[in-house]
Length: 53
Image 1 (cartoon, rainbow, N blue to C red):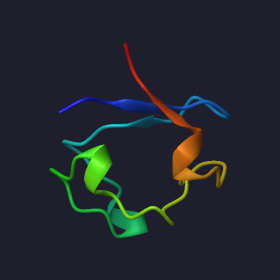
Image 2: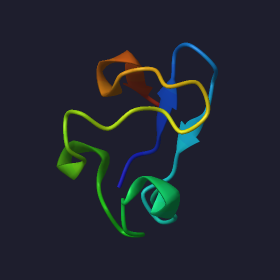
Image 3: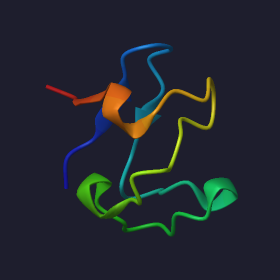
């Protein structure tokens, strides 16, 4: 599973860790996160994330 990075604050979403505080279980692929999820650091929209190369 790919990691994704927030283009606003550079927070990295790691699918192995998920975002437990945001209700995203570890092991959740970025594509499977609900569209209304926001960056836990800066509040940017899911659409503001890009795949980490």
